[in-house]
Image (tube, rainbow, N blue to C red; front, side, top):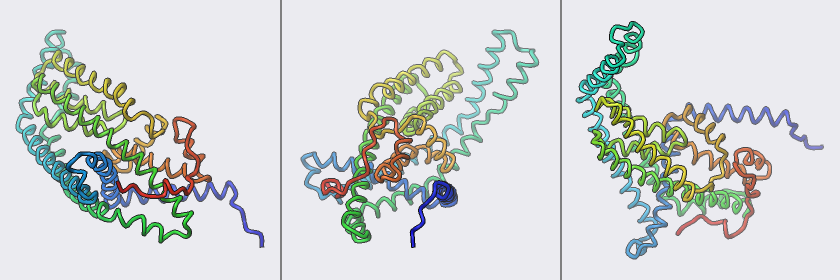
Length: 367
């Protein structure tokens, strides 16, 4: 009996069914999948940091597993401290919200007086629909509720990351035992090794850039005497993980608050210019030299991935969009039948051929 071949129509139908099923799973399983995926990305980051720390004289004598767990404990402590700082800051913003709202109304009245719009019906209508609808206290309560819900997610991420870190050593043995042949296991391990290398390097350099960005932004905010400078500096650093839109949002939030704090357009413009200059310098000059184009993703694909993952998982999805899309591209490029899809995602047409089962790439990094 002659085996049936897949026709292009069958392939299209099966691919469509797979995409719809995967999308449904991602939406319905968000509460389960998001902590697991975030924990996996966190382990990639800690792996890169652990490899760098082992080059230091003292830390180099520690077992790699112990160093990873110490880094995870340190990361968990930092996250919970920042969560406490964020919660306290939001409560402080709620306390000064009436003052900020009064400053905004006074500034609008000053602009109206300068241009003689005090009795203009259109101006009053526009003001009522914009400034009149601002309720910083209600917004702060919504943000505080979001932080409360985020606490349980962060706890699950830390727990998952601890188990993933503890089981890394046995992963290669279990994966090899579960596959059919040594060649197949070597091919899969080559894909895993490529993902480990690229994602770890990207996250390490991106995190370093974001720390520098947050530090410089804190200095600028402190110099302009902006309230809650540390809070906004951390927000700027975190939002910079989001491609394209993250840097815009990172500048917009503290600039908008400074307008409410000072009620001065001149100070707000100066602050916005200073923060934007730092973003442009790091984003367009420093970051390309450190990270380059190692992920090889088309800017349009990154934008589509940002829209897709934000729709599926909200802000966490926006932060994870680039690593997740890069992992997908690496997997697609590793097999002959799907390599053409990887080429569609790439910026440069130099996607490496399907992974070959070579011993050099067939092992997981256990530095």
